[in-house]
Every structure is written in C-alpha cells, then in structure tokens.
Image (cartoon, rainbow, N blue to C red; front, side):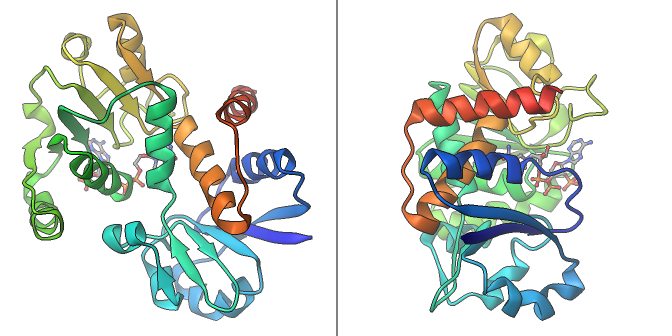
Length: 272
Ligand code: NAP
C-alpha cells in the first residue's frame, strides 16, 4: 500500500483525505492519506520519517520551510518559492500544484486568464495568482490593505518576469476588470457578510474567481451570480491541485468529468 499525507500546523478539519481517497479510487490505487500536524519547530526532526512516505502535501506554515530539505524543485516551485507537493524516492522532489489547480479550475469554469486582471490580496495564494496572471500575459492590478507591503513583490515580479504590476489599496478598486480574483479571507466563514467588491463593481467585471470554498458561495460570488457573469469558487482549485499531485506521485491520469464528479461529492460533504 502506498502512503501519502498532508503536513501543516494547525490542520483543523482538512478535506484533503476525503479528496485524495476519492481520487485514489478512480485509478484503482491502493493507498492511504494521513494528516500530520507538525509545528514549524518540529519540521526538521520529522523530515526523515516524512521521506519514508511515497509523497506528501504541504500547507501553511511549511510551504517555504520545506524547501531546504528537498533535492530538486520544479520550475514553478522555484519561481514562487513555495512547495505544496513532495515526491519521495531516491531524491526528494518539490512541486507546486496549486498553480495547476488554479489554471484547471479556470478552464473548467471557462474563465479566461487575460486582459485586465485584479488580484485582491497578496499572501501565499495571492502571490501565485499574480505570477500566473503575469505569465499568462494579463495586465495585473493587485489590491491590498497596505500597498507599501507589496512593493517587494512588485520588484520581484519585475526582476523575475520582466513585467510591471500595479499595486493599489483595496479602497481604491475601480471597475471594469476582465477577471477579479479574491485571495483575501474576506467573505470566508464565519464573516460571510463581507465582500472585497460591491455588486455595482462586480456588474462591470467579466468574471470572478474566489479562492474561498467555505462557504461555497461567498458574498462576492453571489454578486457575480446576480450580475450574470462567469464565476468559480476555490473548491475546484482544491480538488484539481490534489489530482495534479497524484499525477506527479504515480503518473495518475484523470478525465475532467471524473474530477468534476469528485468536486460535486466534496461539495456535498462540505454542505453536510
Ligand atoms: P495569507 O497568506 O494569509 O494571505 C492573505 C491575504 O489577504 C494577505 O494579502 C492579507 O493582507 C489579506 N487579508 C487578510 N485579511 C484581510 C482583510 N480582513 N481584509 C483585506 N485583506 C485581508 O492567506 P492565503 O494562504 O493566501 O489564503 C488566502 C485565501 O485563499 C484564504 O481564504 C484561503 O482559504 C484561500 N485558499 C484557497 C486555496 C484553494 O485551493 N482553493 C488554496 C490556498 C488558499 P495582509 O498582508 O495585509 O495581512
């Protein structure tokens, strides 16, 4: 039996075992997926035990800290300085599948990553959305609480990708973006009454992607629904990043329709 898992701290109620087990069964893979709650000060002493697994996922706060224990980094993991998937073996390899999860989620919702893209928030997920949007050729505006804090990111993007992004304050958001991406926790349970954009602003945008999946329909997404524009919540990204991790771990392959069924099952599980 193959053994996989998730490291993070704290882990709380994670959907990852549910999602991975459903994905394992699609490929008939005999594997188990466990949760390992490891604090930042305990990562070092747990590394050799983790390397005995076939592979593992990495979440907050270890996405950067894990890098020093790896022998190889994928191009995207290197670019973002963040790893969420590790494949163990003779050498230990680190990947970032969040970005592939994001791109496949957009594809499933038929949302194009082009034109004027507004990314709200510039934390771990926000960084990846910004990099992917710039790589896709979009004109990127980043809205944050404190624009001064994002200057370093602007310089990093200029140095690594040779392109400029615009940084504004969340209170300065204009309208008319082709795509709005929310990577702040605004609208997440239990504060479900908040949204980074108003209905009037959303009505003038082309599509909305909200990284949040609890609730499945944030206030921002309810505005997109009312406005009649394309939208996606973060659940599709969560399931797709897990599917891509399994593609890396054991060359699994997935039909879009099968993954969409697992997204629906995960949605049912979350709604219980
Ligand atoms: P993070 O690293 O903590 O970054 C959060 C960002 O939001 C930061 O820019 C932060 O600004 C900003 N922010 C925090 N509270 C805010 C508020 N009240 N008003 C305005 N801005 C605020 O978190 P993350 O890992 O990027 O996650 C962000 C969201 O994405 C979460 O909802 C998370 O659940 C979701 N997510 C989803 C997936 C998925 O697979 N669907 C994956 C990863 C994350 P400051 O720097 O000023 O604090």
